Length: 180
Image (tube, rainbow, N blue to C red; front, side, top):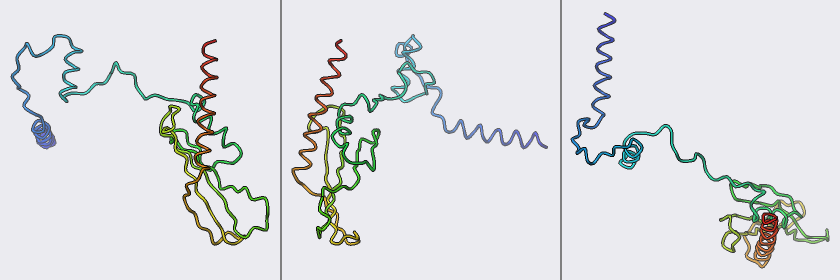
């Protein structure tokens, strides 16, 4: 009895598997099929058939380390006067904590800024980095009534320019070291 059920289940599974396959009896010309096995594999992959277990291609991606990226190092050095809330090299972003340059404690409006640096490229170019400045203005000292706005000011351009200059200097220094 068990063998009947086993054969029935085996037959059904076999039919399902075979019905999902394309026509296995494809007529081809022997001149179209490469003789070399590697060439056959490449052709099959190009046509979308089969899988590869072992590949000649190197695995993984390109891993750049933060210590070798001049833009990243320059950004850290330029913004070292303030603490970071987020510094993600793999995410390509640096976010500072809110900070203020107010020296007088009797100011009515408490103004703080936050700098966000986004890395769009590893190359030292003006369009490879984006600096965004947010401003938080609180009307009272308890900081309960605050408004946060993205501002466009010369601060963002100044920070970006300082980072680019520092990155260029770091790259020049590293090239000198590699020449020696």
